[in-house]
Image 1 (tube, rainbow, N blue to C red):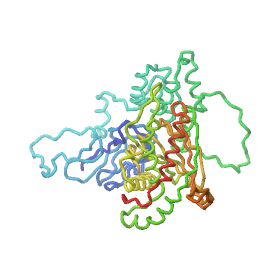
Image 2 (cartoon, rainbow, N blue to C red):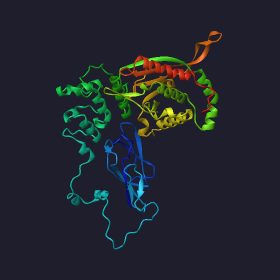
Image 3 (cartoon, one colour):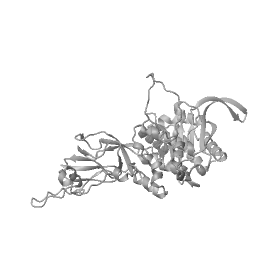
Image 4 (cartoon, rainbow, N blue to C red):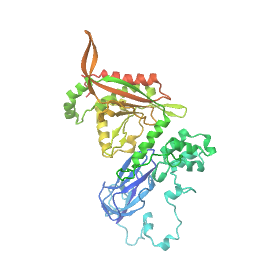
Length: 463
């Protein structure tokens, strides 16, 4: 039987490691091609690792909660394939060492036995293993004298920023088992000051982020001991969301502006074309693509809303990548990103919205699909809310919330004078980072989005 190495797959350009959340299969279990073997998590997204071949799980090399580097072997699969099979470090896909079409050549009866594969040493007798040098595990390599694990990425960031070991050990971590991840380092560096030399910097930072491990104890009200209350532990994703929200509010002074928009023409147009749109293109047309189209147009008019802050520098983004907040069945939120949204027509945006929203609900998004956003749209109207004050999705500087569309009496100017009519009205609110976006820019951008929506062409032919 041949053995196939199951490799920790590459989950995105900036992802160098992942945490094992759950082994769906155990040693001895039969697996089919593309059947899920384990579930993993990065700082960005949870994902599943499928089997590259039909076979049986022969060995599992890491435990739940272990942090594994991309490209490391995480399990061995026995397969009945006649050819020797190797695993691609980048994708985990199998490739035959006999070529694409050539059949495997049988070994000569007089030829010496082939050298054992690296995995064979796992089953060698103990006395032979003693003669080999002890190879430390990935976790042992990343550990310091304090016993704390640091990934290669975190160590590189620390070296670049001249962070000594003592300072690094003091940084609070939000990863598995309290490990420091990339997001923790970025958040710490944004608030780092010279107070660490006095032994207070990391503690002050931890207190700012609301970490309970190092901040001073705070008196809390007595909790019920009647047993009627339920204590619910935060899941991994909820803890990441909580930390990200606290970090955002601590980073950016938030200001929120509001406008009310008449979207009657959009509502009437959608009601008229939605059935034909789906029959013609196989796609549902919702309001979200229309909102994203208007946002992309307004960003082109006000490009300084499409920026991020890096210390004392403002990074003006070349691409318009619009994230859309999507609610998951678990109650958590995720923000898939429509890349280069300004280069898509309404049909293209609708396809992207439907695809990303559908795969978000099924937990099938790729890490790259929730990265690189330059602006975010959230639809609080989905929950029946008329308006909201959203929190900025760092490192962006603005986020737009659209509320529920409601019929309301409104004053309309006509050539015969002002009249009151029933119109479809909607509130929009823009939260923006007042460090770099002042009221003029934020308010003008928001008003321009509203203008584009109110000027919607009901006779458009691009769909």
